[in-house]
Length: 243
Image 1 (spheres, one colour):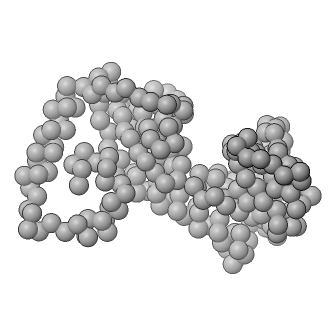
Image 2 (cartoon, one colour; image 1 turned 60 degrees about the vertical axis):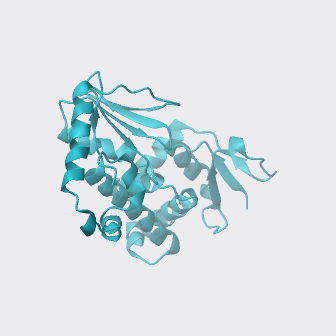
């Protein structure tokens, strides 16, 4: 059974779903991203993204299943799990045949997809409580994150509603992605490096906050284990108080 390779985009994966339909019954069907970095075997197939085919697959999923099912696929796609592509394609084929109820079953692919969706949403929820903004010299509210999953696209929707009058930028340091919201629309860019100048007020505020945090801390009552239980240490590095 050939492996299907594509460009790593969501539209690319939808194109694979369209093109690999004849192999849908095979448990050996595998999907992988970024074929340009690999040496392909003779029977491997490199799929070129076709937006018209991607839209047809989207429509079929919404018509035969639901918009909610499509949203779950999009969320699963944001996972950093190396098997997410294969899991999604098998779950879609099975759902189109058996119905959306498969997500409530113990089917191995559907169960795996539910687990990945939960991981992505849990990390998004964690960042909603942890994310800290700092004011840049030009007035943009800026924050840096290093999530395990690609939660940036589903983080910005929350802050667009909460901070409607602010200009917002959130930088995913590991993926070198930044989302910028100018008060009207949000766009995502890839950047190699950033040069940031903080406003004078931000510098003063950050120092005051660190001083305050230090002053109320009681060394004898410090409980790192409890802190890590409430906020995993992985997320500490971009907190102003730097726990």
